[in-house]
Image (tube, rainbow, N blue to C red):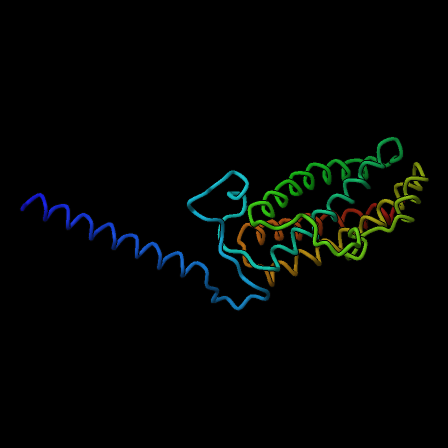
Length: 209
């Protein structure tokens, strides 16, 4: 009888723990913050992966849109930076190009990992190719930048990158207001801080060129 009672107690304890876990998971799926858009629970704890671990916890539509829009935005900034090779002349422009490349490529990889973990596509699928986003260059702008060298390149690069960064900062500020995922909001903070500082430097460069 003693062994039976021990087994019964252990079984009841396991059932109680499972019920508590179910209540906890249910609570995690709710949103008391009043953020915009639909909220989604984080990746299942039963099937963790290195991709989903990049942005743990709940997320909402604003987080998804932030990543989907910022990826092509960053990719174009890298294309602009790539044009500086053999064209840029000013040392400070070259330094900023290196800083942009070092910061934005890793951020692209992070955001792709988030979307994969969230089960969302990398593109919003609007067919615009990203050109409708704030600060994005047109094909004509990119062709014009590729066609100049030296001080002309430096001036055009600074002017276009200021507008491009301003667009990224506006998108990041939207994420800070409306997003829910802590990791995504932290990156938005980084974008606002870093790119705002780079805009200040670019304006100084443009003033003296």
